[in-house]
Image (cartoon, rainbow, N blue to C red):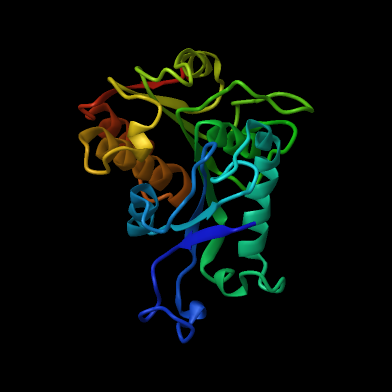
Length: 250
């Protein structure tokens, strides 16, 4: 499972860097949509690293470029769990040096489009829920596909949905319904004029992209890193000028 790892270097990085000298950091697993391909220079991944996270982005053959298929959705939750397994295991010969750098008690997941649905499968679906995941973010979630073996239950870990109101690929309505019906902490950032791709793949300096990244980092700071409070998230997200912020009724 080819996976891009992005994290802050130790003493300049390289083979001589001592992983044991690093305080364990929270982990975020990122999942692309169909035809996407994660790279170490992606602005969202770098924003998370700058905020103190280790980011792992699997380019699973089921969804990633150059050959991606919606049928690959069913494999995505297992890919997410496999990446977490590899990074936490210091004896499997895969990424042994990362086990000292990743905090097993602070893990989040995020994704885009159908990749977001797959990421949420790992966080909230009966079929494949990974209890190690503390919180999840979904950009432009495309809920067309589901998983066998149960249903989504948004009644536990926190969820942030980010969606453009001009998205003509993935409808906004299911996300609005999720917020209205959820019994757990679910938030929705609706980006005014945002399409399916701009909030995550558009001009990385646009106000919309900058706002979306900032809200994601703040959300994970609250619910994964534990360095912020829910009140700080509400204040910050409510001040975003490119969108509107709503939260599931308590």
